[in-house]
Length: 105
Image (tube, rainbow, N blue to C red):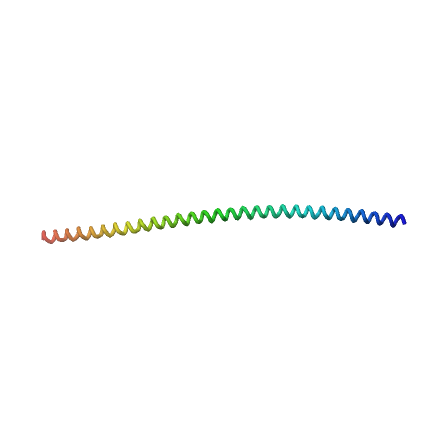
């Protein structure tokens, strides 16, 4: 009878120890998983912020390129008009010189 009682008592103690150890392991696993998720989240957050900064930089570059294109377009138009005026002036002067040369000959 004493052996039976001892085996029952040991079984209860072992089951109690098992439950406590299991709870401790589960708690440690939760802490480790939480730490891993926080680390992964911070990495993803840093990547998101970097992508957001890159997108803002690209948008600023696009705006700058559009401004440059507008400025270049204005310069292009101005140069064409000045070139046309210069060619017209040259043609007028050339015609006058040819006319003077024809009168001199």
